[in-house]
Length: 337
Image (cartoon, rainbow, N blue to C red; front, top):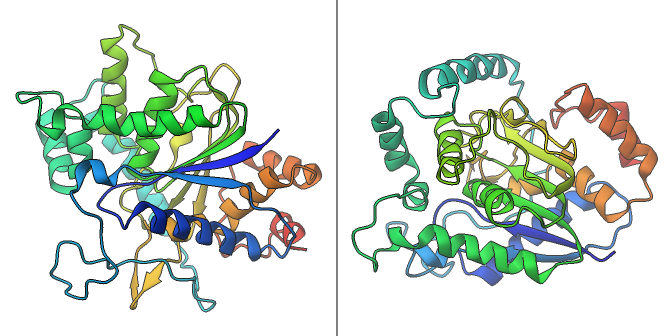
C-alpha cells in the first residue's frame, strides 16, 4: 500500500507553507540519515493553518527583530556537539506535578474546576488555543466564530485526499489537539496507520476537559478519553521534559486504548533545536530529527525490519522511555548498524 506522512503544525504564526513544509521534511530526513541505513522517503504533506489566524506569514527577509513578522527560528541542522542533560530529577518533579494538576483542575467526570483560572492561563500563554476553543460568538465575521471549523477542515481535506494510503499523522503542539479532535469527532472511520504527537499539550487537564466538553455536546461522555478509533497500529508521543507546552508528558496515563487496543506510548526525548545560542525544546524541527522518532519513521518506511520493531514494541509494553543520550542501548545500537 502507498505510504504518506501528513504533518500539522502548532501554535503561533509561521513562515509560508512551502518553506515550513520543506523544513519539516529536511528535519525528518536529517534524523533518518543518522541511522546510516538506506531508505526511500515517502510522500509528505504539511497541513498549514497559520494563515487562518494571521494576516501574513513570518518573513526570512525581515531583519528588524521588533517587526511582528520577523522570523527568529528557521530550520538549521542540529549541532554534532549537542549533549543531552540528565533530567531524572526534573522527571520526578513533573510526575508529582501531573497528579496535583489533575486533582486541582479536573473532576472525575472530566469537567474542569476553576474555569476562570484555566481560561486565564490559556489567554495568557496560548492565544491560538483560546480562539480555537472559543464558545461564544457574537459576530459571525469574528474569526472566533469559525476558526475551529476552518482549521479542522484543512486537516480533513488532506486526510481524505490520501484515502487508501497507509497514513502516518504527525501533530506538533496545538496541531496534535486538532488532529486528535478530527480523528475522534469528525473522521472516526478513517484508518490512520500511526499517530505521532510531538510537544503535545494533550496531557493538560484543561485540554482534556475541553475535549470531554465536546463529547458532552454529543451526549456521549466517556469515563476516560481514548485513542481515536481509526488509529490502527500505534500512537507514539514524544516529549522533551524541558518543553513547557508538553509539561504533562505522559499521555498514556490519560488516554485509554481504543477498540483496536492502541493507546499512547510515551517517549522522553531531548530536543536539540538551538539557534544563536538559544535552545527551544518545543521546536518541531528538533523533535522531528530525534533518534527515537527517526526509528519509528524508519520502521514505517521499511517494514522488513520486523525483528527490530517487535523488540522495540516489547520495551514499549514495559513503559520504558529512552533518553536520546542512551545510544549505547542494545536496541538503538542494533538499529544503527
